[in-house]
Image 1 (cartoon, rainbow, N blue to C red):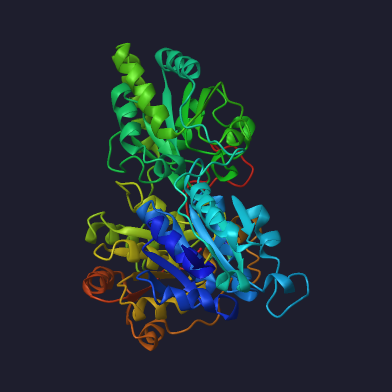
Image 2: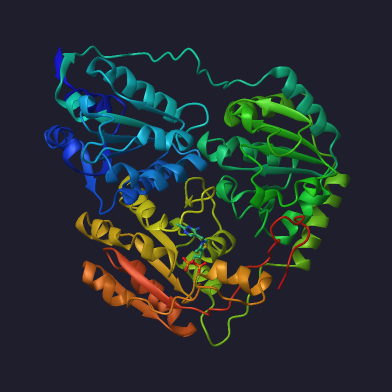
Length: 561
Ligand SMILES: Cc1ncc(C[n+]2csc(CCOP(=O)(O)OP(=O)(O)O)c2C)c(N)n1
């Protein structure tokens, strides 16, 4: 069958199960868009290409599917870079289609020409420039395969304008085989046996789970391991929700803003089972001191993440879910159980740490941001999909909203991208139109992609934005307060828009609370409103996130309130 490049693109998007794409048109993709309106694919027209990538990313994180976006060449393509890097750092499966100038003009400094393949090489899992229409189908199939398999990630496909209109014979491709790319899903049994022996001998074991557990849908298997052997669980920011926040074995997040008990447990455990993590510096602090008395089992599908930052006793290369399933099977087969007395001692120690330093704040006359999040948790009964911006708002969301299920907490962990939360919330809401989706935001971050309120209103996506307005770039201000003798170099936002009027100008609802006794009613009203809403809370500007481990210090060197 003879098809144009644009028709091949639409055909393959449908074959790959894509129902929605996020994008913004331009000259180089006008032919692709012309074909798109003739297809039954849903297109969400964002207001900035960065928003398109974050929305596709939020859609992918919430649904577990590959997120797709379509943008034009030149500035359209460069505007996607932050979004691509964000997804790359958090291993999120995306396919980004960029338009390119016609093949005969490439290298000519043609209008809106940019070498997006060169620019994104270090922040994509893979990328392609399509030189011949005959290659397009194979490349697109490979792009989806690479994005979603192994350790997922963003893949960019750059399509020159003439390729969109060129015709070729199209034959469906049923199987993708890439010689040099074969991720290891099934773990080595010998390694698992070694891991099992360590588990048998451990007296103070600890599970450290990460984003890989969510990506491989291994939450049930993780809970099975934890419950079977009564092992307490901590996680990275990216792993929140993989293990229920309401489970008695849950310790909270570890690391720079981790709980006291989680960080103490890391320093005192004798075995760490690390699953789907990459030992980021925000987690480990000073690496020499991290779990220094423990043997470490590290399960991960990406062999390059093993022993990258932390020495490991038993590496297990494999998909988290397959590896945990197999490990649990071996535990049952060998009848391994935790020794009651030693385990009780370990769990009692953790309760002692919990009581020694709880996450705490004092709600006095100004609204405390933590109070807003606690109330949000109560009013949404812990069921909302929560996205965040970056900074204190993100850390308080991680600490005070307790996530019980995977894919419920959507945040830019690795890159820490301000402006992520609103478009990501839009993407999550597109994936789940009936669910409550809330972006917990700072007044700084929200201004980075606020234009996407227009997208939310246009498509009637009822996202709720909770702005914790502290009138400053709070997290940087916190570092200046604690480590730079209170020299607040350009972190005070002396002018801000009226967020209520701004919401209204976009055609959304705007609400504001300035006193603690207005918080609950404002949240209730905002959450009950049918369409998109911005709720602004005027919060204490000098509040800091605690515990805090100063950068480069051991994670037991916590500043506490
Ligand atoms: C795009 C981008 N620019 C700069 C930073 C550095 N940064 C990290 S947190 C932060 C402050 C964020 O302020 P705000 O959104 O108001 O949140 P708050 O910390 O006050 O909750 C800044 C500037 C960043 N993470 N991302």
